[in-house]
Amino acid sequence: MTDAYTIKEAAEHTGIPEETIRYYERIGILPRAERKPNRHRVYRPKDLETMKLVTCLKKTGMPLEEMKPFLKLSVGDDISEHPELHDLILEHRAKIREQMDSLQQILDFIDSQMIGIAPEAECGLADQPKRFGFLSLKP
Amino acid sequence: MTDAYTIKEAAEHTGIPEETIRYYERIGILPRAERKPNRHRVYRPKDLETMKLVTCLKKTGMPLEEMKPFLKLSVGDDISEHPELHDLILEHRAKIREQMDSLQQILDFIDSQMIGIAPEAECGLADQPKRFGFLSLKP
DNA sequence: ATACAACTTGGAGCTGACTCCAGGTCAAGT
DNA sequence: ACTTGACCTGGAGTCAGCTCCAAGTTGTAT
Image 1 (cartoon, rainbow over the protein chains, first blue to last red):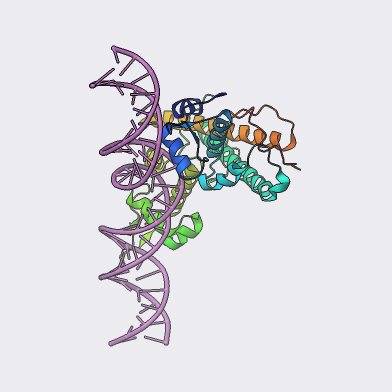
Image 2 (image 1 turned 30 degrees about the vertical axis):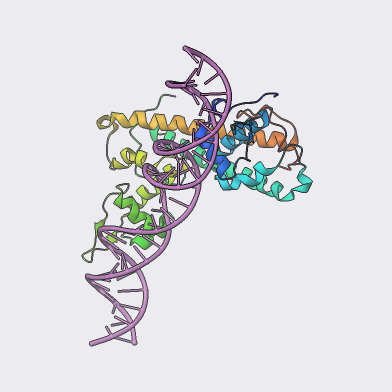
């Protein structure tokens, strides 16, 4: 039993609540976990990595359903057998870039409104009446 | 009439669907809009700006309820009368920074896995078996 | 033997953020 | 007078993503 974890331990290691891990299994985000004779779930290190990958992808705003193609890949898989993933991942990479741009714009906007230096932080709010023009920010 | 917009026009200008604009009014995200004698909503430029601010804050992952304090502020308001907002906005600014860090880490991780340069892009996935170690990325 | 804790299942309930709909009003055009 | 289209209201329905619960099983400790 090299490195076997209970669901509780898996929850602790990944930060994903037990209930949610079971939920993920139910909806097919995680594969049906290995069971002990007493039906209890057993998790291996690679399973924990998969869970962390879910958390990771979630942080980038990817919906659970969209993760499935990425999660289906098993460890040794080669992209040449999954050319569709190449595009998917590039696509998602582009989305992340967009998100970062949005956040940066908003950050610039907040800061400019807060300290009055205004580096034209669009976000479609360039000539917004200074709702935030009241804060003095000490960075 | 100085710059009055129908709900349809407001929707076009802000990218927020009509139904959603009405919904925002219902739940108090937007103030009750001015009405024409025929009960139709009328929007002024400042209202469109408020809507854009909602869109903007949404992009940063702020839940609608949390926006209320920011949206309640009217144009000329002074922070000194709303010291609680100063903290709220700084708090949110910190959240945005965190989000950006997360995204950057994931971007680094993807890229490192894709081209094999691996600048140790944590996200809790440093020693993830190379699920993504199959892509050749041309930036 | 019995209590207890840690798990199991299947299903119900919840929150946030919409989205849709029925039935009604109103102004303008034919 | 009548139709059309843009709008109105209040309420119901939808979807994602959990979260909770009841009822049952199993393994260990007293």
